[in-house]
Length: 82
Image (tube, rainbow, N blue to C red; front, top):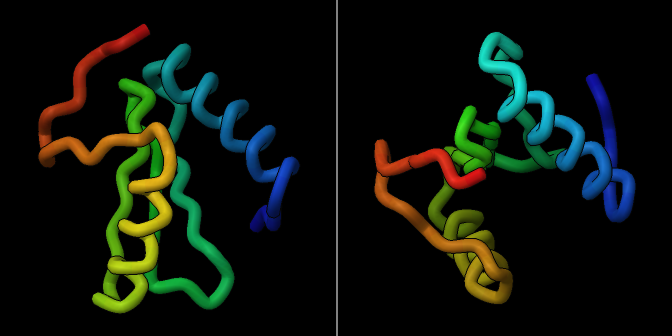
């Protein structure tokens, strides 16, 4: 179990993303927030996938994502971008 927040989380995420996209056989690595109903993972295309099990938390996460440069793509629509 690894705990990270703030700048540490940003750095850790970059490393996991690079490992995943550069090494097809790198095992899946899921992540979740403390006391969160959401679980996320990076796919081989560099996208972040997440499952959210509580509607209230989904609405909050959707608000946060809308303020970033991230976009919501349909399931199965990942493509190689690098």
